[in-house]
Length: 411
Image (cartoon, rainbow, N blue to C red; front, side, top):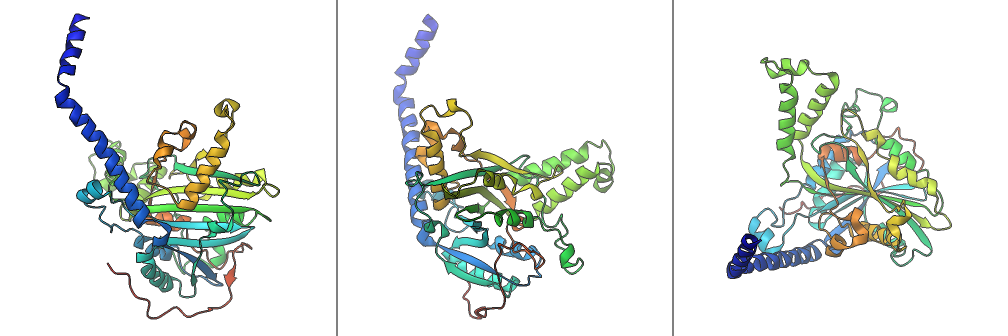
């Protein structure tokens, strides 16, 4: 005990050396967090974004590859966040965009919420890939319901966010796996599009009900998923125990392993995005149907595979056991936070209060996932003309010619 007390006394005597360091680190972190929040408020507020509604023409002959071109544009590293000085001193962060599919009483809508600086380029590319699509700048659809943080007495909602079951470098099943990249080789009626079951589910809801689906994305430039992907491929190939060249070694793997390697290698050639995926089901209490909640959990099954990755629920607004909500407040608080996060498009930059609130344990440290532009184009694209989902409203003819003089966004 004497030895321990002497050591403690010695360390305390050195406080002029270590205390300023600890306090400096603490206050710098607070200051940097303040600068980051200021940057997000100034550069990423609603006034810096436009909401684009995509109205589908009667006939779409494009592969989802067309949407992949558009999503590639959202891989944006402007704004100073690539420099460590800007990140540390000024709180610069990578800007986000979002892909959103919404069902309002069974009518399905496609939205792109993009930075104003990218809007012209996104429109240009949309018109180049889908010449007959109609693009309108519209108000945010979330404004057309009351603020549910104050109206849970008359409205009800169920929220869900999602995660991946496997390593983030393993892709989900994409449109290429379904053969949708082979334009002209398959009859439209014979195509299997994984987004159709999701749209059918969204189109099945009734009066008063709404489903909102949101994929918030930002360029992935700092994670190490590509390095881990290459190491995983080397590990799979190396387990054959052969000195043959790589093609012969791959041929000795199981069909599932070969399929996985092919998908991962294809992902390595694509742009990578960090993404936060969430959905909401909401309705006035008189129209809220518990069975409709299942739509949120089952929407992504067509994109899942045992040889690929899978999208599954991670956190919800549900409170399963009474002991989890002894105060009776947690369920309402979870619903309020889910609604506020969705409306504000909060994603990678966590609310400090949420980080420490004891009732929000399942929402703290919300994990982002990695999707490539190919995966995002699979989850969000304009379905072909063979789609018979009644909730999708298609325009019979082009209502306005695509502008010929759309200015390109400044680089």
